[in-house]
Amino acid sequence: MAEIVTTLANGLTVAVDPMSTTRSVSVGVWVSVGSRDEPDHLAGVSHFLEHLLFKGTDRIDAREISRRVDRVGGDINAYTAREHTVYHARMPARNLVDAIELLSDVVLHPALRTDDVESERRVILEELAMDDDVPDEVVHRRFNEVMFLDHPLGRDPGGTRESVAALSADQIRSFHADEYRADRMVIAIAGAVNPDDAFRTVDRTFGDLRGGAGLFERGAPGPMGTDVAMVDDTEQTHLVLGGRGLPRSHPDREAFDVVNHVLGGGLSSRLFDEIRERRGLVYHVQSAMTTHADAGSWLVYAGSHPDRADEVRSLIESEIDRMAAHGPNEEELAVAKGYLTGAYELGLEDSGARMSRLGGMLTLHGSIRPIDEQLDRWHLVDADATARVASTVLSSPRVGVTLGPA
Image (cartoon, rainbow, N blue to C red; front, side, top):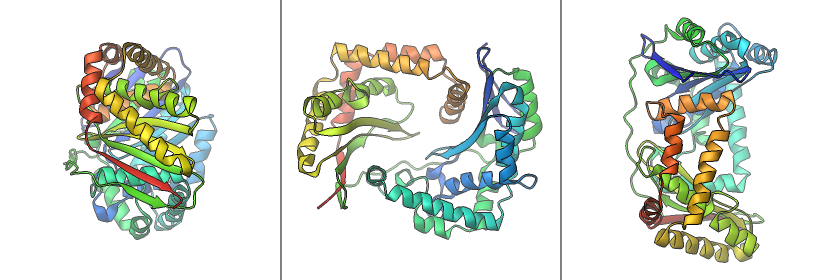
């Protein structure tokens, strides 16, 4: 049975993907509000709110939330991204109603007590401090700041120590009341469930949620910054090098998926083969791409001994230039397409992945692309398309960020 999508009277979108071959159900509440939607003085409020929703509601406290999930062997979690926030639970399929009711209580009726705000503030500050102790986290964060200079996309979703310390309980409560509305939410459900039962339960638990917020008006990013070199007492020099990429719905998105995989996306990639396998200069080297509604970025990350950092950067630049000039060859094209399609199919074997597909497509694209259509989009990528997108994207201006000893 194919996925079924409906919209409740209040504007809430609900999608169900029935799976007859599993015994689990995954439920996700996808909110189209992320860190790029925060004003500067509220930087990190979405992430702060994500933490607080699990501190309890007016009816149940944090311990009872944990007990209700543990009692059935399930899990519940959340994450904050730049353009959305997600709350999700996975339980045995017989506990569908429990999962929906628990998430609705957590997301719609959080207590947001002042004492909880203060205790969770300390937790988040420790989380930020923990990230500051990880060099590759620091260099990636600084790269994003430079890539999207003076724009909310460049901010870390967790905010800064200063912004987290300054957020008040009233500001967090107001953000939840103003932004968590029905027309900014998608409820995605996948698993061994009856769709009618799922729709009825969602209507009962989320049907009173107000709508009327509409989608955010998001300003496009301006120009990039320039190279940054950070000095720290690390054993390796960490490098992130990259540039602007493609927005999420760009017609060449799949072609650039292929280019990225050939460049540095897997064990057979050019960067891995040349810099690690042939020369033994690094343990880890990888390329990646990120897409947003109106912008994107690509990057290559590597960590190397400081004495070899200049050589590693030069080799990375050479491989990027070679890819920009000629694109992948036919064998590389076939391997990358096989990997992308196969990994996509294997990734849809569990209810959590199927739920994420529904929620992600509806939240970020506004519709669900059929699985076979997505596979065809990769299959139809040809050498001309990859050569074109490699030339266009990889020949554009680049910026590099390094962190290591002086």
